[in-house]
Length: 196
Image (tube, rainbow, N blue to C red):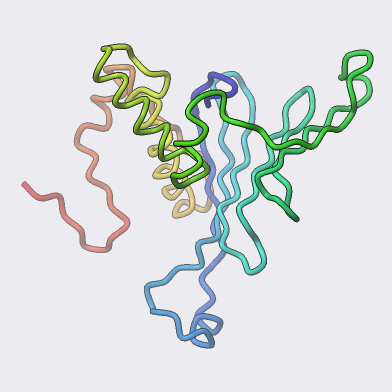
């Protein structure tokens, strides 16, 4: 969303079924899920985003972003904080390398950010929140974008339960969309009722 300045509009969710035999072999708790799913999200510019959420054995934290002009990903081996950028020969500028691997640095607050979790994300989430309160300046990641990220996941799970059919992601910036979902108390928990 941040890279392309787009919002999700539709989603299909897919889930790998729970393997109870494997769970028993590992002596995992009964409620522990596989944690394996895939979301295919259509953005408001027509782009498609595939998000794989997995906790497969042997899989680390790996991110790959493809676009019209190339890809960027973190390395799977050695230092996973290193980034690889790859462009096709016909997409690069004259003299520009087709592939580059480097370790990015934060442009500001590098020392503070590197001491916090999620690759510095925890620091910057709090930093921009505090700055918005102090200055009154609206951060890029406002409440609507934050809710859109959460709602896309909720709608993806609704899709999973509906044979992975396409589900709309509401745009809560629109009053009519907020009104449509104002009484929505759906829950994945069986028998869960909305508290009055």
